[in-house]
Length: 228
Image 1 (spheres, rainbow, N blue to C red):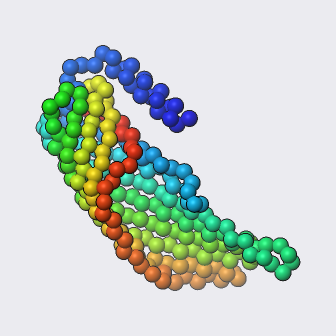
Image 2: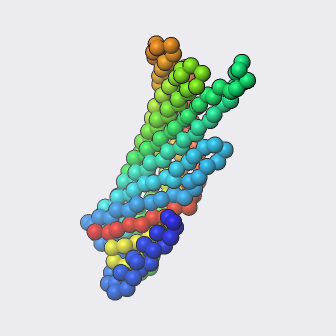
Image 3: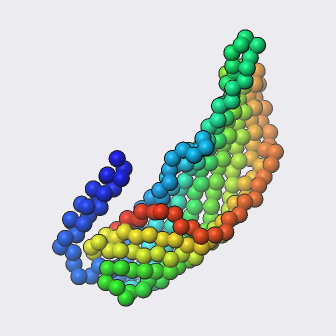
């Protein structure tokens, strides 16, 4: 259904642009905003990975140079049920759910090549901060004990990017982008809260982690933008 709606929206956009003006690309001191959708949601090995959504804002200083601000948001959730035999011949069930939410704020710049009328290839770079929050909850139907582990994270990322904007008409474009980058995420100890027998005990977490990634960012992504 989502694909049908996307195709219908694209067809409507093309129809509206039938009488497009001669000047398609942005000029100096103008502003554009876009939404992007990264495909790949679904369930794999018990983990539900929601599609990644984001937004980008650009201020064109002139026909070639633009400053940008890229925002990103993604969520991954995993739920596991463990079955344990009980003395009555039945089973106890233990539920474990982990959800991780990640947010990025990446300012940067772009240089656009103005050789083509409707197509605007560009190169650029960005650097910014990343935040991550992971929450793990464990419960069971034997005694309703509950354990909650929270682990926040803070990091940074730097990317070198290249992409292209294809202008359907003046003020409306689609495009794609890929890049080479480095991400680092430092997850703190956080906290562990245990609720058992009517008592609640909260302590510091038992571990911290430092994760890093270096490589190409090349995911199928739909970008739709508006220029003002």
